[in-house]
Image (cartoon, rainbow, N blue to C red; front, top):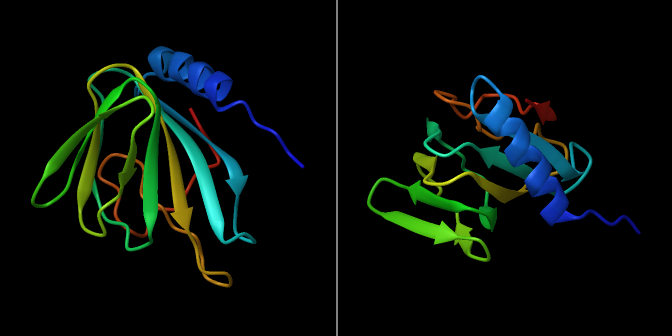
Length: 133
């Protein structure tokens, strides 16, 4: 059985995001092409936004640290550490109000490419990068 400290991973990637030119950092902590779930910690420096992108896969965001705003076509929701959000299956953006880290959990279908849009101006065909700093 594997154990990952999400608190430590969140802290580490927030520091990486704050130090990076683009203000974000991410790392897949579980899953990949041969798993049904993919879980990725994404950290954003305060004020940074993952620009509008689509994902048709079922997904949730658990806020590990900070304060974020998830905006879909018809509504926006703000969340803080401990909150769990359902990612809308429509175009959406994620904005960090404060330095933040979230755990993105995406359901994948085995045998199909796992595509998750997480970069600015990325569309549904954006290929995931494992250690994105």
